[in-house]
Image 1 (cartoon, rainbow, N blue to C red):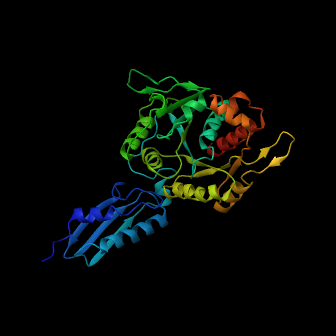
Image 2 (image 1 turned 30 degrees about the vertical axis):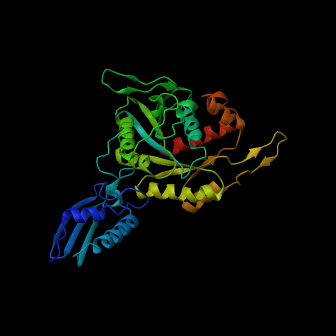
Image 3 (image 1 turned 180 degrees about the horizontal axis):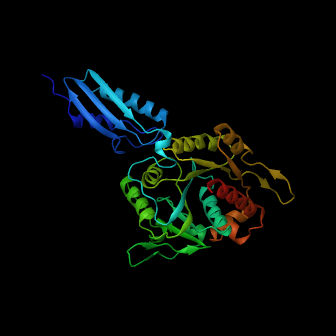
Length: 349
């Protein structure tokens, strides 16, 4: 006589079902709400928090597939429940989210791949928004490779207030928090996913951000634990995608856009970085091509926020902790970041 399938068997099988666009499964997300099994029939109820019909369809297909392979199962019923778009609400897609105390808007800055200048854009946009009169914070969520402290010229460790909350240091009018501020020089971070999740949650909810108009979150490349932790922990008001013009970058930009759409986060727009280079004699050289970001924005039906040219001064400013927006706001690159920041501010209100 064959062994009857148990709820643990069913959960273990469902753990192989990934949430579309992520490396994490539906069980760890807490989407499995009801399980029953009797006489070879298995019934499962899943509760999604996103109204995305494509995600629901794919999850249902994958769940039915893994359950049918369980020994002794001859009938499978999977019900996927999800809210309507109105019920879900803009930027609110996971259970147990909490607003960051004292922060009006949380904006994620993301890229599908590394090397596109995402952190450079993050620091300059944060400083540009501050120059426009907004109260701004900048959170470095790149746990393995934090670069925000260097680019912002911040080296002191955060203080701890009477409420045992971290007080972020301020640079160029921007409050800054990064794992790099808590480590000794060149100390590597060798952590698994749960540690990253816990750290990002603490940076969001246990830091004294106080009264901010914008909290910009600089994400690492890809769609991994940091991105998941951010989307699960707080409701996002929008995502900004950084890309370079060439197809190799734009191909993974589509994954970043798909990630935000999967979790019902509004896409505020695409920024084309390293758009072109101007030689000393005035010749314009399109090292990585040109216009790809604008074309991709049109294809994806999302706003194009602007383009940033290549200038040595941008890199020099980042290396010495003095973003180009701060050191030379009237430089062509400084003006480009200021214009993008102004467009971004208008889009989020």
